[in-house]
Length: 300
Image (cartoon, rainbow, N blue to C red; front, side, top):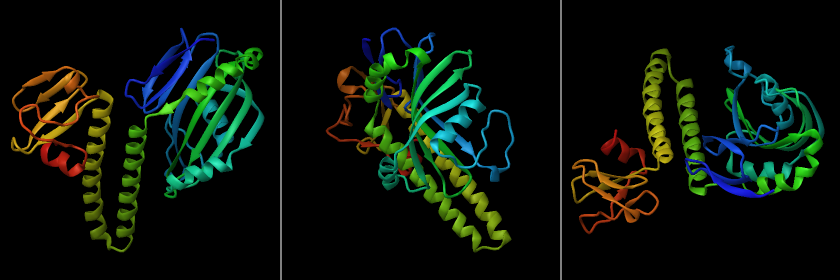
């Protein structure tokens, strides 16, 4: 089977898939690729709440932290994607979990490889392979399940094993995107832990004041994170010119614009991929807006 390269629109990941397949691009390294015949290649991430949150709303999955095999069975059944799932093999990957645990310290990590049969929502007997990762949280409020999955009609899965191996091996996360994604998560967890520890030692009035301040702070933090996420998805980068009194230049997929004057420089040297911050008008290396302090001072 001839495979062709595909890159997600936000640049977060790339992979190969058979020519003619369709891909639903969800960004953040997540996609669903396949064809109507029951073949698929999926990268997914599902966030679940724990029972202690006492949430019971349609579309929200609630469960205690589960190992990947249990999680995958629970999620696919909960969303009506698969039924009659039977595992042929569940392969624990403690080696991978240890490696991931060195970077992910917010809770437990469990990794498993899964080989199984199931009935698709269309009623077709299928077989699948999933590399699944369960990420826990010490806060006990939620956890997440990340996976790479390939499926095919049960009688054709073996013949497609080589193609699936090539497709799985081709999946790559953009390093810059991944580093920023992890860093944002770590910052938010530290903020939440600090706020929780501080509230325990205060009286009721102080707690109310702190909660309001924490809410305001979280809103600002979420606004900044949303600014970063939106800029990355759109392929934009903001730069600050000190020689022009803090003027903001914005590079996009086509060029760079002075947002104060509207002056626009178009072409390869000035687009998002190639522009490195050299002021088009002055001999100056502009400063990228890569911190919340700069964002609040010049953008917000």
